Image 1 (cartoon, rainbow, N blue to C red):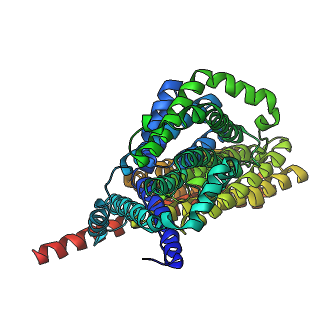
Image 2: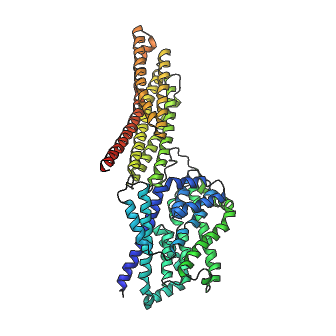
Image 3: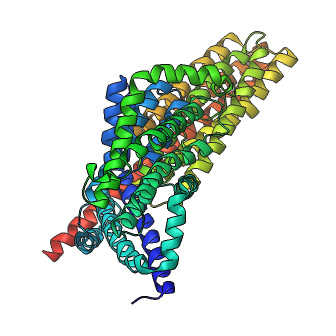
Amino acid sequence: MMTGTAVLIYLIGGVALLLLGVKMVRKGVTNSFGVVLRQTIERGTQSRVRGFVSGLCVTGLFQSSTATLLILTAFAEKGIISTASALAVALGADVGTTLIAQILSFDLYWLGPICVAMGMMGQAGSKKNRRYYISKSIVGLGLMLLALDLIVEATAPLKTSPVISGVMTVLADDLPFLFILSVFLTALSHSSLAIVLFIMSLAASGFMPMMAALVGVLGANVGGAIPPLMMNIREPGEGRMVAWGVFFMRLIGALIFALIVLPLLYGHFDIISANPARQVVNFHTGFNLIRALMFLPFIGLIALALKRFVPHFNEARKNKAQTKYLDKNALESPAIALPLAKREVLRMGDVVQSMLSNVINLFYGENRHMIAEVKDKDDIVDELYNSVKLYLSRMSENEMDQRQSAECQNILIFATNLEHIGDVIDKNLCEIGAKRINTGVELSEEGLREIIDFHGEVMSNVRLAMNVFMSGDISLAQQLIDKEAHIREAAHKTSMLHFERMRQGVDKTLQSSSLHLDIVRDLQRISDYVTHFAVAIIEEHERVQASKQKKKREEQKES
């Protein structure tokens, strides 16, 4: 017979093990299939029914409606999907997250040690690749089964305790408090699945009366909507509207079930199932399925109501330096976060290309207004760079395999080079243009034509570098390096032609000599920065190839 202290230790340990198992399953699946899951959600928003189905399927695998909701709020905030579509996917996600609870409600505790053993063997000797993360998910599933068994065993002796029995009687009589307690615990743990499974275990052991258990399930469903709401509470756009919409649909659904359905079921819980554990999970699935059928036909009206009654939630951001793709909720999964960082850097590259395209206008005519435009864009580049740099540094705190680490490093290198290019344009070329306008100096016709042509060559290199960054194509990277020799020749040629005009005593050339040479020098520096990235890409490729060849030789020796 266990003492009260031992029971409490076992119970706390079981809950902690359950939460760890849920987290391992979620993280393993996210790292294995995160990009696919995200793309499935994005593609599934073409209609409400399709959105509902995609939410159900994705969350059935992902096993976290809270995590799916965080992805949805990020998509809505960035304008990728509409509020109505996001709400439809969320309803499907709520049904999908009940599937694993259905499976675990069967007496499968004996599978726990087997899953842990298989998962550990799958991880042994493997790098952090898909096999590793799938094995990690299997270990997490095993831990969940062991935790549920531990909770049932720990609570079994409590049924005979008069003190505990009295406490449970009080809780069963104070259902509103129990509902609020369940909401709080779910919001705190960030996992409605874990709380529902915990309640299922208490009900299965006979420790918790069924009415109290079902009220706890309703509270867990409402509590699961709170973390995304808190994370988006300060956001002015569509993301916060989606979070509020999901919260209200869960709360209204829970109140309808608590006030109408549960009183009708009282004393007739065997209608749901004869097994107490099945009663809890069937009620959990039924609640989310019926709620989806209730709200799905009215999703459009719900989205309109949110916009009408809370219009300030739909204020558009005007800050152009606001990041568009970086999603803080994806940081735990590099497989999802790295492509997002890459898209943000591509956006940063578009701003740099616009700066470079505009700066040429400062070397002829009166285009003083261009100076302020270019400088404003450089401020945007600097802010985006700081956001990307912080995002990548926070991402590096999580587990990454060798390929992901290399990609993270390449993204940072390219973003840094873009930021340097922005500084060259702002602090050097812009200053040269301002000086030319202020002094009234004009470049000679031949010199201006040469600089425009050279500028076009550099622009071409920057565009090619963007293609290399997007594709990682080694042949394009080599092409970029080969073009650098042409850039150097072009810079040398225009400088020599400039010196020749000086020897001939061309008046405009003599007046603009320092400007001309400084422009050529800075444009060449810009080309150097993008070429450095191509060199990094090729060096990384050569390192990977050398590593593969070394591994192959070692395998041949062993065989």
